[in-house]
Each structure stands twice: as C-alpha cells, then as structure tokens.
Length: 151
Image (cartoon, rainbow, N blue to C red; front, side, top):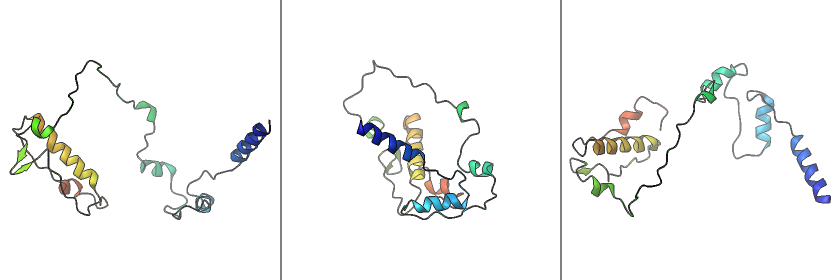
C-alpha cells in the first residue's frame, strides 16, 4: 500500500511541473537552461517570429496524416543465398581503373557524408541497372556545391 501511495505522489509531482509552451519566450529559454544540459539555449529568432515560419523550417507538413507509407510486402518463399558479393555479381561495373561497386571514397574532413553515400549508391545503381554498360562516377562535390552550409 505504501508503494502505491509513493508511486501516486511521484506521478502527481511529475505532472505538476509546468513547461513553458512558447519556444520563443524568455521563460522557455530559461527553463531549458535550468535543466543543466551541456549546451546553453539562446534567442535565435525575434519573439514575434510567426510560428508558421518556424514550422516551415522543420519540414513539417500541415496535414501530416495525408502522407502514408506504402504497404510493406514480404515474400516468405524467397531463397536467400548464404553469401552475396556485388563485386563478383557485376564484375563489369568499373570506371577507368576504379571498380565502382567496391570503391571507397575519401571524404576527408567534409561534413557531407550523406552526399558521398548518395552518389556512391547512385553510381552503383546506374551500373547495375545497365548491366555494366554504363559506368559513371557521380560527384559528391557537385551535389553539395549549391549548399553553402552543407559541410
């Protein structure tokens, strides 16, 4: 019985903590900073910045429920090999002396690893789709060249 009362008190105490709801308010910023995180919250937008504008920066859709994922189809009667190596399955996927599928690019200190992964996958898919007839070496640098803050 004591445990039930203790749990009830803990729940009530947790629910009684109020968190400011306006992310642009000084109260909200002060609340975040009172949590003792490893970073300090500050004012990044004017207090009168429209909420609609802030939402547009997050990629949130007005009607998120209108977007549904496609149904996932699974086939249970597919034979999956014990091992598979794309390099031996598509040996003609080469660009000059570079084997497209087995290439590991050096991104150095570039912060756009997503761009390297994307162009490597696209290069592989183009080669595979053409059955090794079309070998392209797509450029991560070209992909991020129009983005000044992409790393």
